[in-house]
Length: 303
Image (tube, rainbow, N blue to C red; front, top):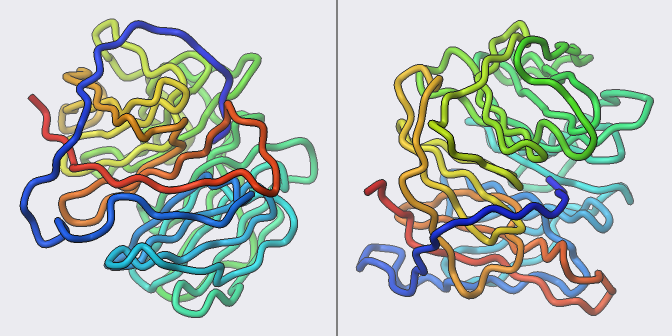
């Protein structure tokens, strides 16, 4: 979910407090290993968060109750980016410039399967599970990679679904964050370099979502809760909040929230009343000693 810098005007509502909920005593900042270069985050039934590394593809598991954790799955030496967890406790990992994907056991860190998605230049960026399949975006190539799932069985190979319709690739980072549409009959994909949001069908046919003049430029990871979409705009240090219609073909940005601790967050996951965002720090030169952390904020409600 790496992006280029864009500039748009926005009004930010700074979040400083959290409602008194069961998670109120959980830490609101989770320290990650120095030099880790976090990018993706996934949270299952909890209370554990999984954070991916762009540096070497390792996965860090953190206990949300204490903020403590450790690397529980060593990477292949190529990046790990967007992630999601299915109901079987399997962690699906997008492989970035490695052009691959992995499936891990979220309890042990064991690699259950690896897939070569493409042999050419690629940036496999994010993943969502819907309609009996895991769907991966590629910011370089106008395709979705479909990994059909049949219960607890993993497939032998992946399918390539070409993107058609309104979503046109151009220079820079294209298709990035992906999440199911509210009606469960399609996908929502954000195009980082244009700020446009698209509804994509199972065939790859895309239709631009009507945002009523708004933009999601620098759009990165996304999260859908009910009919509310949370879209991270990484270099803007903001999370856009968009109520959508039932089909996901229309929505409005009703607010953007930020936090003084944000430092180019890349994506978002939810646990109870909170959103968790790893600071990717794309504007900071990475070194083996660069510190990183994930930030928790109250989950904002549409106004």
